[in-house]
Length: 295
Ligand code: HEC
Ligand code: HEC
Ligand code: HEC
Ligand code: HEC
Ligand code: HEC
Ligand code: HEC
Ligand code: HEC
Ligand code: HEC
Image (cartoon, rainbow, N blue to C red; front, side):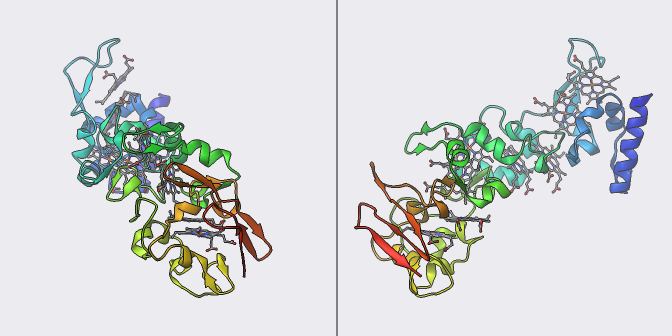
């Protein structure tokens, strides 16, 4: 009786939220929910599951429920099951220049998403940061490049990139795969040396103003300047240019402004020795004696 009441309440709530709901609701979903209301209990519900459980489940002919005997199989295995409706995700993952290996291994989609409902947006099983750091909690020596322990960097440093606490990791990364290295959400140049060009760092300039890099002289665009000489511009130009992560550890750092403690030059880890000063700062890396800038 209480189950029936809960079901009616759910149906009313769904119908109020979306008047077209009742029409789209198949008989199957109603009969399944009589016993399985739990699968749609959480706040964010998968449209496919609200509409019809049989979008993904198929009876195998057995009486249901029957203890120890499965009544249902899935129409297909994931990720194929999901791709049947989410074609775009398929192109963005399997077709990606830089794939995220989780998409094709283990429980793939179900490592991160609930097929039914969740208390997190986008049907994520847990908050995005937790989800990502759940796997990225160790360093890995991958084939061509080592992968750092991001969990340690993002949680044990004094300063964490603003975005990680706000939106998690997808402000900068594409969880399914990307046309950019490190599955980044905007273009990004790999390697230490690159050229001064907004296009090389679009992943940063979706949020930060590109003037902090591009204006050779400025008294406003960046605090990293000596008088009006833009030191971002100075460092990232010419033939020996550096990319943002040469100086900033974007996931987290002990220094303010996310300044890294070391720059790596191939196998050599060179300390930066950054200090923030009144209206300026100083650093003493191996490539030059201590230098001070003042605004
Ligand atoms: C009369 C209550 C009842 C109804 C109606 C019902 N189920 Fe179930 N279902 C159960 C119970 C109880 C279990 C757990 C059985 C077990 O633990 O072995 C279960 C288990 C399942 C499972 C996992 C095991 C299996 O059998 O594959 C799936 C999937 C499932 N149900 C889907 C559905 C779908 C889809 C519908 C609607 C077409 C539905 N159920 C209708 C009671 C019900
Ligand atoms: C988008 C596809 C999809 C839809 C739609 C869907 N399911 Fe499922 N369901 C799955 C998948 C995939 C699993 C296996 C989950 C796993 O292995 O972790 C599953 C597992 C289950 C299970 C057993 C395990 C559990 O989570 O309790 C039940 C019961 C179930 N579904 C019921 C339902 C009911 C009831 C509906 C309709 C309200 C429904 N499902 C709609 C994909 C779907
Ligand atoms: C029968 C078609 C269908 C299948 C199969 C299906 N989906 Fe969906 N899914 C939808 C629809 C429709 C939406 C809502 C689309 C929208 O809002 O743009 C949706 C939305 C989503 C969303 C976004 C939810 C949100 O809050 O924005 C996620 C994540 C998702 N599906 C994951 C999956 C996963 C994982 C699977 C496989 C287990 C799957 N889907 C299988 C139809 C389907
Ligand atoms: C590593 C974790 C992870 C895996 C694995 C994963 N996703 Fe996602 N997915 C996410 C995150 C995080 C978001 C939210 C991204 C955002 O808000 O920009 C998301 C968003 C989505 C959306 C909503 C897209 C939109 O634009 O709103 C769909 C649909 C989706 N995923 C489907 C899938 C399917 C299908 C699979 C398996 C083929 C899958 N995901 C595998 C993490 C994952
Ligand atoms: C189930 C485990 C798992 C989860 C969850 C997961 N990843 Fe990964 N990720 C991997 C594996 C495996 C690799 C390949 C490298 C490795 O072995 O660590 C990888 C690689 C990466 C890379 C490096 C790609 C490259 O080309 O160098 C980035 C960036 C990344 N993941 C970000 C994320 C983000 C962001 C999330 C959350 C949306 C996430 N990961 C969730 C397992 C996971
Ligand atoms: C502000 C943008 C930004 C945010 C937010 C961000 N990342 Fe990254 N991430 C990057 C950049 C840029 C790189 C490439 C660094 C490089 O060139 O070595 C990267 C690289 C990685 C790598 C590859 C690591 C390696 O050592 O090569 C992993 C794994 C990763 N990020 C995971 C995460 C996870 C998990 C989160 C969320 C907790 C996250 N990132 C949030 C920008 C970001
Ligand atoms: C999705 C938006 C977003 C993206 C993309 C992004 N950032 Fe940020 N960044 C922020 C926010 C928000 C803050 C926090 C600002 C604040 O606290 O005033 C921040 C802070 C910073 C800081 C510290 C500034 C300070 O005053 O302490 C640095 C350095 C930084 N970002 C570098 C980068 C780099 C390098 C990239 C590209 C790899 C990048 N960001 C990409 C949003 C973003
Ligand atoms: C040579 C080292 C170095 C490089 C390379 C570098 N930065 Fe910085 N950046 C700094 C220093 C030092 C500060 C702190 C300035 C201050 O507050 O005194 C800073 C500050 C910032 C800030 C805070 C706002 C501001 O401009 O004062 C952002 C955002 C930022 N950098 C983004 C970037 C991006 C994006 C890149 C790559 C295009 C980059 N940085 C490359 C050293 C560097």
